Structure formats: structure tokens, C-alpha cells
Image (cartoon, rainbow, N blue to C red; front, top):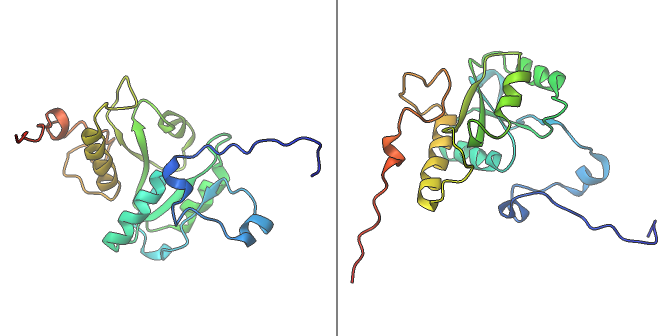
Length: 190
């Protein structure tokens, strides 16, 4: 021990990531690596990318899983440090994907919460589309089924599945309120 007392390790992460098989670092990364403010996607061919998805947190792993299922070539870039905003790293990422015509910020939180307002003020390099839950006074829906529907919609819309006229402007899922305005309870059988 370097000190005569011990400090607790505090991990701020969702429980789902503690044992997620994709959420690991090698011993080499831990011993020789360092913190990276922006983690670029090294699994896609930059010349083939037409959509760059920026995100932060556990949503990255859901997007990665969906891209694997679809077999598509969107770049998924993690912004690990929001403040101070890593402008130079973001510029380098954007330069790496010259054929990208769509750039999206994807977050789980409602549009009026989370990092979106900060990203909007600081991400000046290109136009960026928001994919998030509709604006709300509460971060939680109060319904597990409704949460699941909205989570699925976020993932689908991140990959461009939207026929709404606002799909290329700002996506806050307001175009499809009928999908979650009424969720019938399953019929009870006695």
C-alpha cells in the first residue's frame, strides 16, 4: 500500500455494463493506455460510412448490437468526456468519414434532458440530428413496457428507420405519439 488508508473505488455505471462481454479493456489497455475523450469506431470502413452516430454511455452497446444484427456500416462514435468538449477529436473523427451525409446525436434521455443542449451548443462542425425521447418533465416513463417501446424506437431511428417528414430535422419521436399514447394491458385470464 502506498498510503496508510484505503480509498473506495466508485464506479458510476449502469449495472448492465458491469458484466457486459463487450464492455471490457485488455490488460495492455489498462497498463499502457489512457483515458480517451472520444472513442472512434474501428470496425467500419471509413470510405463506406454514410451515417455517423455519436452517443455516450450504455446506449452505445445497444447500438453496436443492432448494427451487428443489421450488418450495416454506420460508424458509432462514443463521446466519453463531454466537458470540456473535445472539439479537436470530433473534428478528426468527422474528417475520417468524408462520405458521411448524416450525423446524429443519440441519447436515452428526453430531448430536454441529458447532454443534447450541451452538444447543440458545442458541436458546430456539422449539422447534427437529435434522436431522443420526447421532451418530458420526468426522465422515466413509469411503465416498463412504454420504456421498452421508446428504447426500441431510439435504436431504430438512430439507424435511419423513420418515415416522418421531420426525420432529417430534429427527431424527438413526436411524429408517432400513437405508438405509446395507449398501450393496452394484456387480457387477464382467470
